[in-house]
Length: 310
Image 1 (cartoon, rainbow, N blue to C red):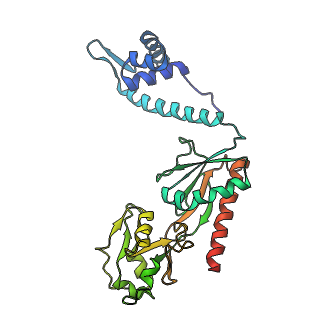
Image 2 (image 1 turned 30 degrees about the vertical axis):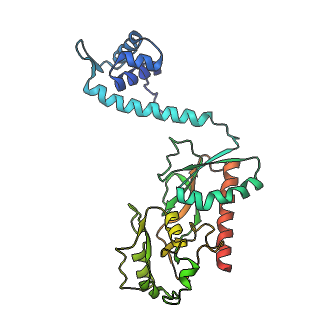
């Protein structure tokens, strides 16, 4: 392996701060040295490289040369990665704190109601839930494990299938038992209001149109359906008798057990995406994370078994 050609770290820090601020004085404030010291560090780096990184202009202060602009981008990225690696290295390996990231709907309807059972099994571990709709960047975020909604292609991460998702119709019991508009099979939906979840940016997501086509029902216009932006809003609207919503086995929560919603017929459609547990390979076998992953999988299997028995 060839010997690395690395300039002094202090000079890189001073240059990177000065490049971001385009000011030696502001860079000095950031790294707690004088503007003169920043200037000396930058000069030392320029001497080491043998090329100028800044142009000194009395009226405009300093501006980056073309080389300085390119070099600043690379140095900033390298220092950020060093900062992230250091933060990870400072984390205790035997930490009893697990930070899990999940989408808001999954966290509120599936994960959080079950965490009490995990605490009973592992009272020595503390789970913290970070709610986000964005993909987790394990290199940059203080997250140990995530539950993702997708197709399972996550290179470089330990990936376990948590749950498959199935969509089915739900409504209030009063709506099912309405003698004037019986709701016994999917074709009966033509006489009912369909509650629509507006999901943007997710191709192949199971909407009412896709679901109806899958179960062989045509001729229903969903363009005038009331639309809501979150699953729990759709479920709440259905529970209050406003129409029929599409629910999933993952996000239905306790609506069915509590009797707030019922399934008027058994037809269901498998979604294009499933739920996966993901975490970095480097930390996947840490005892705390392994225990949490095992518990998540146990909970998912128990839920699937209950669904078969119903």
